[in-house]
Image (cartoon, rainbow, N blue to C red):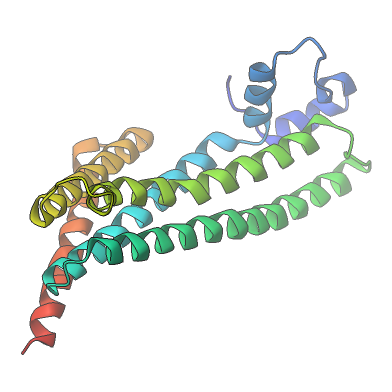
Amino acid sequence: MKELSWFVMLFGLYYNDEYWKLSTTMSRIEEMEQLAAISNLGPIARRYFAMNAFDGTLTIMGIILASHFALHHDARAIVTAGIGACLAMMFSGLAGTYLAEKAEREREFKEMERAMLRKLDQTIVKKASRFAIIVSSIVDGFAPFLAGLILLTPFILIVASIPLAWDVAVWISGGVGFLMLFLLGIFLGRVSEQNPWFYGLQTLGAGVATAVAIIMLELFLTV
């Protein structure tokens, strides 16, 4: 469904109040599509997903690489620290985004009510606003958690007594991490309608820079 601006819909409110009420014959999927279009949720959710999946990937890669180069080869410690970091990012994303989006949309909503000289509590725009807040929070919270959990999977297998060499787990996790960063760049490139390969190399470069920084830190601390 084509995304609509708040101002176009507000203009239409003068002429058709029924537009602002959800049809009882509308399916759940159609309803969510309409709420997403009204709240302009698509671009917001894409930004939150890319930004926080990127954060989650780099954070867990940092934990794994730091442990590896420090010769602290303890899979249980990596899993504990990694899942702890994932949970922290998830709850931070859920709570932080909910509060930030709620504050911003409430301010926007009050401005709309003042402009329209009427209350909009029982309209579809209010429901769309609540829908966008909840979905944005979920995307922001679970994107880094799931990205980090993917990278921790080889070490979770080691903890579960599945035979997997430490070096193999590091190579698998690192390789998947760099691939995820590259694919996130491709995704951002396609969204921006720019060269996706260039974006992919940029996000991949961030991962390489992280690895180099960790190696240099370890070399500095061991001098």
